[in-house]
Length: 107
Image (cartoon, rainbow, N blue to C red):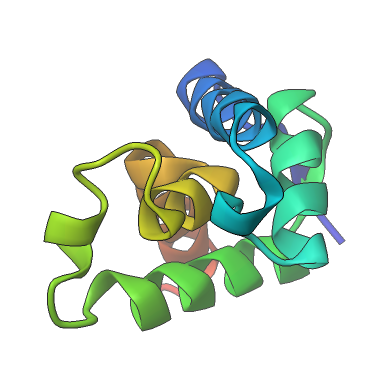
C-alpha cells in the first residue's frame, strides 16, 4: 500500500497545534489521543498510509461543515482550532483531498 510524506505546511500546522495545546491548562486542551498521535506523525513528516489519508479526509469533512466551525477556529487556542490543527489544518485538508483524488480510478 502506498504511503505519503506530509508537506512542510502540514507538518508546520500540526507542530503549531501541538505547541499551542502544550501551553494551555489541561481544561483548555483539545484533541483525542488519536488526534495527538496524528499531529506527532505529521509534525515529524513521517510517512502516512492511504488509510490514514482517508481518515484525514473524513475528519475534515465531519468538522469543516459544522455550524460556526470556521468562526470557532479563528481563535487559535479554541478547542476547534486545536483539533483542526492537530490533523494538519487547512494544508492537511488540501493535501489529503488531493491524494485521495489521485487514487480514484480514472474513467
